[in-house]
Length: 239
Image (cartoon, rainbow, N blue to C red):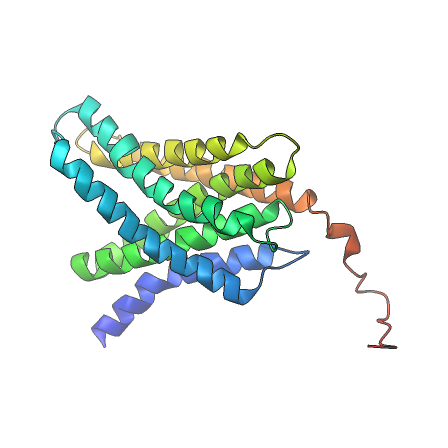
């Protein structure tokens, strides 16, 4: 029973955030099958991360007591590798889908991939660290992954739908890596008094920016004026 409860707590945040973003897609929602596929890509991105990290670990060693080396660890070895592993599935596969037909879809697909990644990671951490770890990550790590994904998706949406702005795809990977690295760095050097608050600040700023990004792309939807007025009767003739 304990294992089932632990599993439920580990799965809950990723699923809840995925549903939240799906419901925020007000005007032209994505096919459920494609969203599940995106979630599965996120699980595969964990494998990509592990493969890349295993190669890096053979050539790079990090002094846990060095501020500069921990910065390399946080921003390049962890954040860049993880965000790149997610990015290749969103930009390389989902971006090309005919269903990716409005700016907000960048956020939807990025979040779904990220939640696949974060959910598998969360299950592994929870069964390794126990209930305390699962509950802590419920309110911190998984929401943090979601904010990184929203920011990545915001720029991927701009890259696809703003004329001659394909370079925004690089911004997508860069901004996700920046926030991810800042969050992790503050945790990696937790021996510095009060520095853990920096991770909390990074998360709060990420959530604030994510809300703005969601709102901007909702307003940019080409489908928003095609939504029927629910106050008017629906004409069912010839349907």
